[in-house]
Amino acid sequence: MKKIEISPLVLIPSVLLFGLVAFAAGDRYSGQIALPFMKPAKEIDFSSLNDLYGMMQRNFHGEITDEKALDGAKAGLVSSGGDPYTAYLTAKEAKQLADDLTGKLSGIGAEIGIKSNVLTIVAPIEDTPADRAGLRAGDQIARINNEDTTGMSVETAVSKIRGDKGTKVTLKLVRSGVKEPFDVTITRDNITVPSVKSSMKNGNVAYINVTRFGPDTVQLVEDAARTLKGQGAKKVILDLRNDPGGYLDAAVGVSSQFLEAGALVVEEKGNQKDKLTSRGGGLLIGLPTIVLINEGSASASEIVAGALKDHKAARLVGEKSFGKGSVQEIKNLPGGAQLKVTVAHWYTPGGVNINKEGIKPDVEVKMNTDDYNANRDPQLDKALELLK
Image (tube, rainbow, N blue to C red; front, side, top):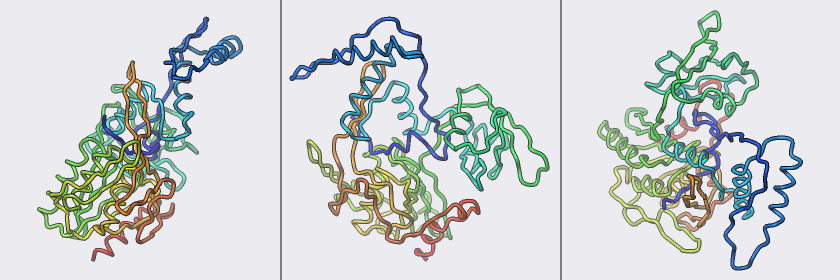
């Protein structure tokens, strides 16, 4: 079973149109329900739970079904452990998590954010419905399907813009240089957002941005490294800002691009102990490297940042990271549901567990709302300055 190192941020995205989890309403249930729990060694009397469900049926002014009641009971049982990262996922939520890790979604293909208190297109993703419809960076979204977006959060906007392939959404846009707002109707489609973006900066700096640690991330980082080194890259900026994590194996693979074979990447301590080491052979070993982090850098991102920092393979620039030092495994359940359960806590090569503490950058550089509104990036600027 694959281990994941991901924060709850992935289920509630702040910029990319990954969408939110929704719960379907059901039909009214007119009887009682027998909950199919396996009896533990010490027998537990679940009759009070059954009695409680009967009370809900008799008194609740709304709809409740067997399926929803069972899902709620399972979620409550799992949450009784008191661990925010151990969770019962319904089949729909499990699919959402899998799609998030692979970057699959159904929508228009645009990054959105709040700029100057206005919902704004940050950038359309190349060759997506948004791109083909002519959306531009800086376009302000005044309405979504005729609903005013004033005061609307990014998360709410995401949920309204996303939708099934083949359906349509109409955005009223305000564009600089165009006198009147105008409508654009876009047909939604299935979209895969790559987990790695790369470019050359200042002639010889390889810039590699990892947005999540998915199944293809290691190969994409290696491809980017090979391409940029072929173009003359001598230094590296690894941008892990707002990366909520992903597969533990991917974190080890990305770290291996910078660390010699056998170097400790992360140590797990749980029911069993395990030391995960670099596979070596990385194309970026020995190159001066800066890793960008912020409060949205979590889990797998922190494993990579911690490993490179402790081995002195990179300096960290930006703001303190999220602070998640535990590892989860996914256990498949009948009907497509899953149990995401914490099986260990992890430690950096220096023996530090960063849970709730985060990783402090070597050079702290804050980025505020004014910077974002003005399209400034002082953290990236500082990284480039340090690599001169």
